[in-house]
Length: 263
Image (cartoon, rainbow, N blue to C red; front, top):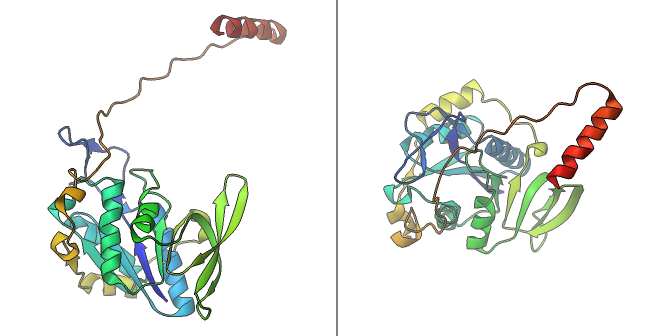
């Protein structure tokens, strides 16, 4: 089974700075980690590889420092890694990012399943995974908490997953190749082994730029992003509430009067 896992390197802090000209995050000099939800995607990919055979390829898009995330994924058990990096990619929103990732996946061609974390901690949009599936025109299931069954010997090949809902879950059958985004309930990510760390340190990671993907420049980066960040600001602090002391019955009356004044 050939599995592709898409990951993102995100700031390891909530104290981030914004570029005032582009209204994008300044990532240089900020400690970074693999997006927490993507850790579950890596783990699930490795578990499926161990169960069915095959290989796990991890992809990320980002500046040179993003290779650290790919090496960590190799240390966690991934077989291959591909780094998508080009100045033309800078400033891409979720639409442009999903297009770039989909072009890389299409270039790989031979795969059965794409796994993403449900969302990134620095954007929280949960749009990139579904965007990739839309660009590749393939089945998708979001918020997957469990892979129930996979039938690789059937024609067509299918998988059944449990998709988390607000009140319970639903079972979906997807024809492969397909894309899923996973939630933290799906597994418990492992720690990297010493052998994995040593392998990751010397691993040669290929870098693909836009000349490898052949995307029109007006479809990527800031120019190709239909989303525009017009203004960034800190919400005003909430005003303190009112406390009613004394007799409970009298406090209730006062509260009712306050509500009447508001209405």
